[in-house]
Length: 304
Image (cartoon, rainbow, N blue to C red; front, side, top):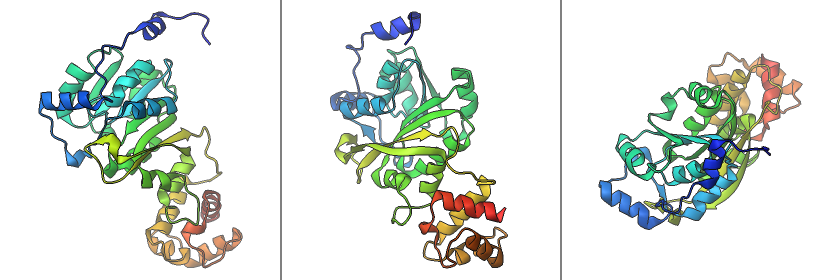
């Protein structure tokens, strides 16, 4: 604990947010949407939260404090951004829909002086550069209500960007959250499960029913927290090769690895693969969905 508080700390403690029209209240959300004549864009996967209890729980589960720089992906009209601004030191919200920018900057976030809104595609943004400028290269926290259609590219983009990450706390479709945390032998287990578990420890912290959104989606959602490992949990000589083997294994789930991996164009012959499987103590008829992350790492090490 700090022995003394600087000006920013005092400001954070003393700010009165009672006059803020929090968008977790559906009445306030409808008022904003009507004011700006906003129409939801299906291509951006827009579903806004309208339950303030859920919004505050997400921010709490993310462990956001006044020491934190937070990157928010897809703020929408600023529902979660408002609470993040009240809890974090600084927030950068990246929004792809240019029609939302004036709503955010001139209205819903105008009360806060610790937020920057960037109109950009998160997949094109230099996140590592942003984190270095805003947080001196220290680990950042990412919080987001992710569009369903682009969940995996965003998550993998964050992990592979080279940015120092503390954690990623995201709202996704419940079935996607389930896939991220399951183990081998289950129907949801796949390349995403292994990729996420290589980089982070996943845990579902909240299930959110469809009724908490506007417009209402067809499925329930879940909030999953991915706590970044300081070191990967497995020792692998060539992670790129391992992930190529993983993708090949799950691209043809019903086939044995001697078929799926050999025919994936990775330059791995059937003879080499059989030798590697035997060295790992695995049957020659094994399928990818039966292997753990550690076994995939061992197999890749044998094939380097």
